[in-house]
Length: 399
Figure 1: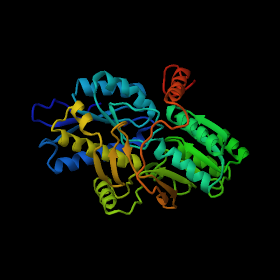
Figure 2: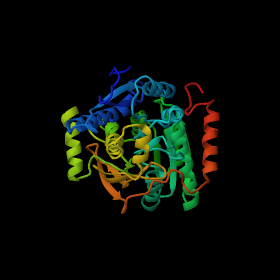
Figure 3: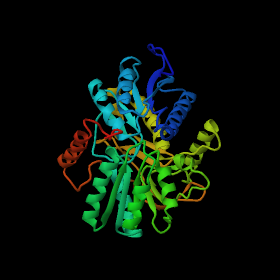
Figure 4: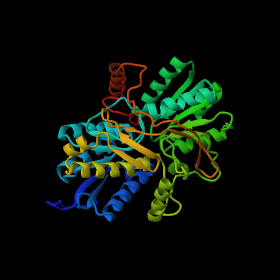
């Protein structure tokens, strides 16, 4: 459903699409992305807009359905004539949307940290690439927690790809993947999965489950798994979903992101306070929320630099563009349109925030294709997943 109608005339507002799941199982995850996107738009408008023009958001619902995302992207570009799209969470929704962007030579900003294995000239990737999440996470775990890993994830392209990267890295560095289990988005029964984890006795659990992560943690607790002895390292579990845990939920372990709410810089304090003023003192910020905010800010800077809001002009102007973000300085790689960013590892605290236990010494270069295989081999992996799911980027219910 479009929340704004009408076309912007010459000199009128600059329209950008906001394409996320407002309904369906992914809606709780994507709520903070929409909110921080709208906050950035409101702030820029309060500052005078872009090229002297206000930004008008056109908010649509991807409804947790990949094909719906593609259809809504088409409508945003053709009917609503937006200048850019801020959109998608899951990799399946992003991959379904990219052919639309390619057909229209348009532009989308994608905020989640993801599996990589992609570099589309019509996407600006403001989350982390494998070199900025999976790979440093495994390095840190091998140095600090042990060599035996058990991987769990939702059954779609990102977790499957992340598992392949981790297996290659463990083979290269001397670790061992002792188990690997997947569940569909809608599944909440993790008893058999946890039984296999208990039997395997790994040093660490790598978790890429989505909205059903809390159900997984509850099953670990029921099985008597001590998060101190067998920690879970979550790659898709941030402060927002963590804040929804019940007081009795025993949630522990680690996360790896570029941004945590607990970063103590003045810039981040201002960001968190601004978010809470708009949405409530109980709301929290997290990496993908931060990246969505940065997406809008980078787009606005690129428009000002180009003197033109057209997708082609912005794609050219944004290469190498730098922004002082709440997480620290970031800039757009000129070759692959991912962000250079600092990487941090955090440990979950009792108050559902993170203590930062490791920070990269330098800003990390984004490398979407890990060095363990050729680009052709990575593409063959993706093709195999897509074909195996019957021409889809995730396992459908009943498959």
